[in-house]
Image (cartoon, rainbow, N blue to C red; front, side, top):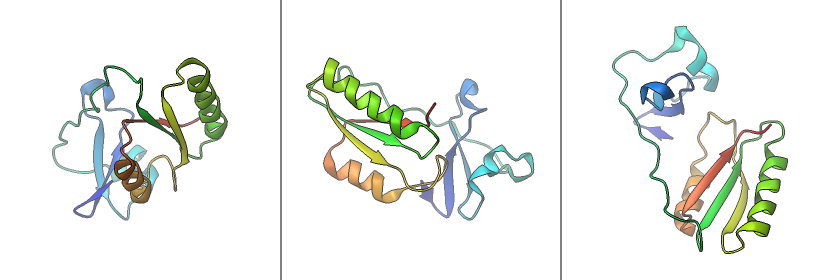
Length: 125
């Protein structure tokens, strides 16, 4: 997500520390988060994950595939699982533009305006 000219990206190495994201310059390569020469300077502020829902019954869950090899097929399987095992959960399968590390403001806006209750982002398998 871009904010004040910076992008928030997932830091796969920071999760055990409680730091879930880092800010990079908006023009940075999405893979820069893994490059020690492009790490942001300054103090990193912790970001928390979204609170867990108590139940999914009657909720809308977006299944977002990121373009990673196998993610679309995995999300289709997940959608089929919900259909069979939790039919009261509405699932919406969407493709996120760009890479798993880049922003897709149009998709986030769609999710907000449609009243999505949860999202599962899949990177494949």
